[in-house]
Amino acid sequence: MRVRRRHRLLRAARKSRELTCLQDNTASIRPSDVLLVSTMRNEQIRLPYFLDYYRGLGINHFLFVDNGSEDGTADYLAGMADVSLWQTHASYRKSNFGVDWMNHLKRKYAHGHWVLVVDPDELFIYPFCDTRPIQALTDWLDNSAIRSFSAMLIDTYPKGRISDLPYQAGQNPLEIANWFDSGNYTISKNLMYGNPWIQGGPRARVFFADEPKKAPALNKTPLVKWDHRYAYVSSTHAILPRGLNQVYETDGGEKASGALLHTKFLDTFGTKAKEELQRSEHYAGSREYKAYADSLEQQPDLWCKWSEKYINWRQLEILGLMSKGNWA
Image (cartoon, rainbow, N blue to C red; front, top):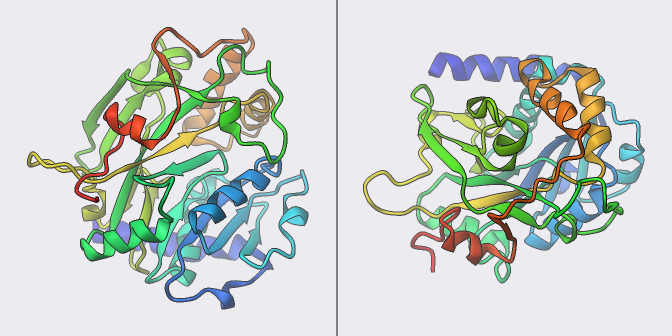
């Protein structure tokens, strides 16, 4: 595992040559700042709400990689004092789906910081997030000697066809995609890295109904007290050293955990799926996007009689999808 980790760090160093810095505000990062790292392409429509949401949680600085956006993403982010931006037109697939680029940025700028790694369509939810900033969570994790914090990815979707309600820049996506599967999940253990492997939800139920074992993974460890020796392996599903993947209690107790509300299924998704299928830059030959494109032609309604409307984090805890553990 040490050899694997060193290999990942060497890859990140090599792939850093593909990044061009467009805006460097990292000199303003303070030792106590909580950072957010994300790779994106053509997500400008999501950025107004995304930035407002995470600034509201208490994120102090954003480290973004723009992978060849053509929608004005770089221009939109220009001049924002809490944003540092790199651009690349290199292959997303050959950078281990952006992981190499982000491992490099964290190694260079995030040592000693709590770092949140999310996609532009993910909203991080944690216990008491409606009343406490993210620094309250990270302080508690520090005091509890916990270095990593897990979050289950929960796909949200509208009631009715995905294309029925148009999404506007700056709008909370949960105003449209506010339903989710309250059950329908399976969990197993990845024996190589020791991380849990969760599948299910509407993507398994609708897009991978014939092959649910090939449905996307829903387990993530997005929040980590970073060290320059750490490296993500596969998105934020697995990380090295292996001990950082031990995010659930196995001896009868209950560790605190969060959720990532995955707001992928808006009216913009059809265009996005076709573009990504054509680019073929995603995992397993874009198998996931092939499934999306095939199903979207029939205008599916992801809502079902077991769907539940999202209210707040306490609802997710009651359903067993996240936990406050012993954090009071």
